[in-house]
Amino acid sequence: MITPALPLPHERSASADASITAWALAARGGDSAAVDHFVRALHRDVIRYVAHLCADPQAVDDLAQDTFLRALGSLHRFEGRSSARTWLLAIARRAVADSIRHTAVRPRPADLPDWEPVAELAQPRGLPGFDDGVALLELLAGLPDERREAFVLTQLLGLPYAEAAALSNCPVGTVRSRVARARATLLALLAAAEEPDPALAAA
Image (cartoon, rainbow, N blue to C red; front, side, top):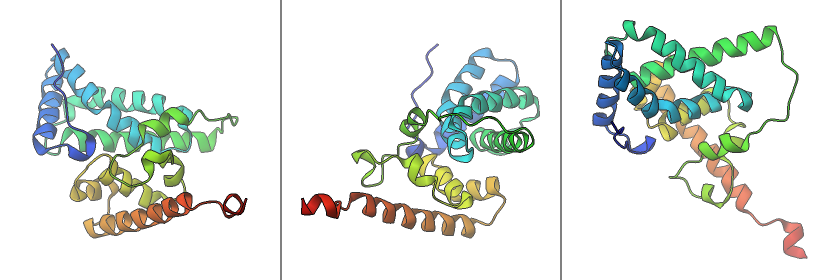
């Protein structure tokens, strides 16, 4: 059975979220095809989200796998009161937090991060300048954690502000403010990146 195509994250409709939630509920009942649909539908969202939350790009795949293992082990407790996507992203957030705590206790040797695949996954489609080779991951890394998370949840993953607020444990107005400030900072960074180098212009 072929998984139906889903819209891009920023275009995701309520009906698509309803389908994903239905798959999660069916998976809870032991439907193996529904498990496959559920994982495939949300894998990219989880990758993007953990890539922007964690400080180690090399850990992204492991964190995504941990997220799905936790989710599949907890499906029997999922009752569909929220969308399955929001529920899964909350699990991803806890997985990243646990990883950060673990790393703080037992720091790993520093490696050269293979960040290019993660940056490619994170490229948005709705902001000017990003298609000219400016890595979104690099720009987002300069934002405060709260603003980066709010921007990723709402602008890249397409989560409604109310759901992003619930996930971040803050008021909706705070999420809106964080997104507005993040967007303003990113646009300023884009403008600076697109300005010609004075040394090259004088040459």
